[in-house]
Length: 260
Image (cartoon, rainbow, N blue to C red; front, side, top):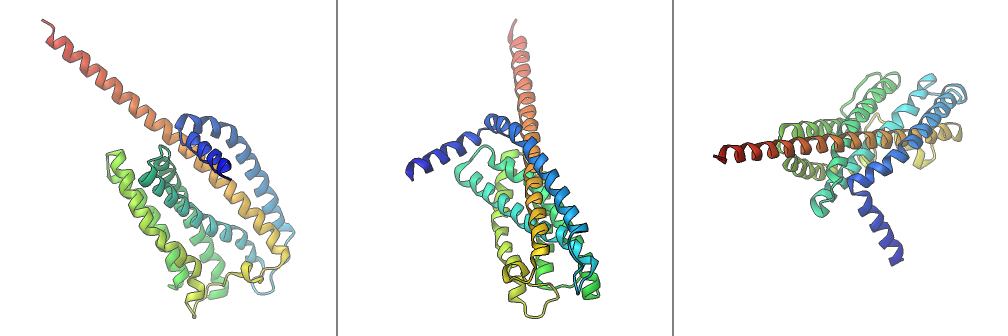
C-alpha cells in the first residue's frame, strides 16, 4: 500500500510540473474530446428519440438531460477550484493556481446553464420561472461566487497575490456546496424536485441517457479545463519571457551608460 501511495504521489508531483502537464494533456485531449462528442451524440439521440414522455412533465422532461448534469458539474467545478486552492496555499503546487483560474469561467458558464434550463424546465410545472427557495437561491449564489472569483483575480495585477487571495475566498465558499446538496431536504416547502435518482424516483428509461449525458458533460468539462490550463501556462511563460527580456535589455543599457 505504501509503495502504491508513493507511486501515486510521485505521479502527481511529476504532473504538477508544467512541462510534464503539457506533454500529458497533449496526449489526453484528443481522447477526451472524441469521447465527449460520441457521448453527447448518443445521449442526445437517446434523450430525444428513445425516452418516453413523462406522465406529468410531458416533452419538457427532455430538459432534464441538460439541466441535471449541468447542476452536477457546476458543483464539481467548484470542488475542483477548492481542491486546487488548497493545493496552492498548503503545498504550493505550480499548477494549482492555474487549475483554479482555468476552472472558474467554465464553472460560471455551466452554473448559468443550470439556472437557465432549470427556470425553463420549472415554468410549466411551477407556474413561474423563478422561486426564491433555498435550492435555487443557493445555486444563484454559487454563480455569483464564480463571478466574484473571476472579478477579484482580474482586479489584482500581481499574479501570486491574486492567486492566494482568490484561493482563500474559494475555500470559504466551499460551505455553499452542502447547502446546495441538502437544501431540498432542509426546506419543507419548496417547488424544486427532491433527489429522485438517489431515492429511486427516476425510471431506467431516463436513467441511462441521463448518466450518459452526465459522463459526457464531465469529459467535456475536463477537456475544456485542460485546454484553458494549457493556454494559461503559455500565457504565463510568455509574460515571464517578456519580463526577462526587459531585464536583460535594461541591464545592457545600464552597462552602456556606465562605460566611458
